[in-house]
Amino acid sequence: MEYVYAALILNESGEEINEENITAVLESAGVDVEESRVKALVAALEDVDIDEAVAEAAAVPAGGAAAGAAAAEEGGEEEEEEVSGVPDTTDDDEDEDEEEVSEEGAEGLGGLFG
Image (tube, helix red, strand yellow):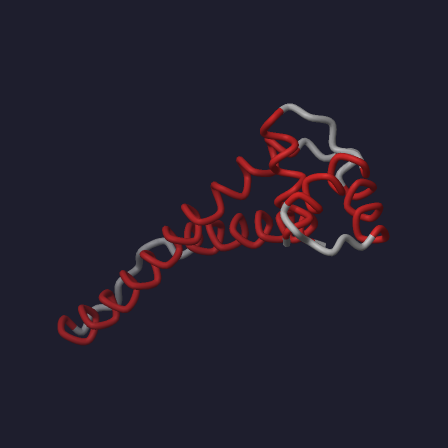
């Protein structure tokens, strides 16, 4: 995780994300640097727009929270159905779409943390 943090620090400060800079950040933090992990990270981030990836990752909790709130509402709807005896016919497709977005965002973020 500290390797990704080093890359994020370099990106935020406008420095080039390369093996030398990542190694310098990690060593200054007291991390025992594994050269192979540094090389793998640099290669993995070569074609990644970090700012875009961070923005997408930041959107995932909002989608996840919405899906969680929807699930909580569904539980309440079931109780209402039992009381009234009439099934609630709200559109459940919206909940499925939100879950798909959350999963897609999480997969993209997983690529950063390799």
